[in-house]
Amino acid sequence: MEMTLGQIAELVDGVVEGDRNISISGISGIREAKPGDITFVSNAKYAVLIETTRASAVVGSEELNSFPIPMVRVKNPDLAFARIVDAFAPEPVACEKGLHPTAIIGENVKLGEDVSIQAFSVVQDGAAIGDGTVIYPGVYIGHHTSIGKNCLIYPRVVIRERITIGDNCIIHSGTVVGADGFGYSTVEGVHHKIPQVGTVVIEDDVEIGANATIDRARFDKTVIKKGTKIDNLVQIAHNVIIGEHSRIIAQTAIAGSTTIGNNVTLAGQSGVDGHIHIGDNVVVAGKAGVTKDVPSNMCVSGFPAQSHEKELKMQACLRKLPELFKAFKKLSEKVKQIEESENHK
Image (tube, rainbow, N blue to C red):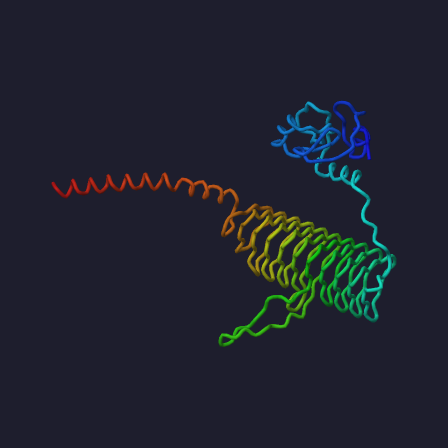
């Protein structure tokens, strides 16, 4: 596929600087680009890479300086480049509609129009699957579980019984939704399992990465609200509630009965203790450990997590410890000399 730079600008509502008639035949990262490719810069600190890129054109923000190669200026380079990728991407893999002969469908299952249930998938009694949803091979859908319209459920996903999935959701391979929450009562050294009889509700437009786990509630429900995106290898425990349009990054773990607000970002390998509340628009930095409530509109980091500014000051002090220790040692020796001198008087 080929497009002129002017056509690309029209696609993303951008303004061209330079030759709008040059031909673009591919897309690539700024370091990997070759002639004929278009690339993008969303952050000014990477603008220096334009000096060495082999790309024929670049998508950049309105605030950036002019570049030595043709440029399409846009308000949001990330979003604009995503649209360009869609335009150049190969056609999506077509999934045959209907039921594969090896699929196992239980009794009283409700299937919408244009559903695709592929090889060796199991849909248990009383389940419901909405219009246009694709169930890839090897998926398990439990009793009385409901999946909405236009969802993509990739191979080896397990969705247990009595779970509710909204419309336009994507669940990637290996993820388990609705496993038992981790609950035990220990009596005389023996761990007795506490029944986990709640459910999981995943609202519309949620995407869940590969090998994530979302546990069912003990009594009520674990909730992932609309528009939230969950990365690979994330653990969400029982009775957690995650608000709208939040982002949970890889290897994050959220303990039971925690409530997370809207537009929250939990960066990679962060951990959140149980029974706490995180407000709206909070950013939790990578590897941070949240052990108490976090008010809205804060950025926290470190362990235990605290204001990011305070954590940076503490880290700066820690880095000075070797120098401070040397200074302290010298002062101790001087004090010792003074004390010995006073004792000899």
